[in-house]
View 1 (cartoon, helix red, strand yellow):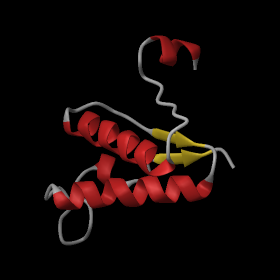
View 2 (tube, rainbow, N blue to C red):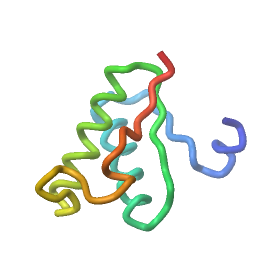
View 3 (cartoon, rainbow, N blue to C red):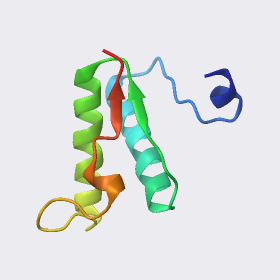
Length: 84
């Protein structure tokens, strides 16, 4: 985690959960759209569900989800991981 923090790849915040989740998902979706292989990691399952829901909504709004609900490996799998 130290290396990730030193490279600006670790997002932490003492601010409101809403703001933090929005930033994490925005960064994640932008990276995926840019062709990067990314993952979101959280300590709580509830946060993982929320991050996945937000990312799926983002990709849906961007027209990246088809009629069956996925368009690529990045969008079709659960990418927010909980350590619980």
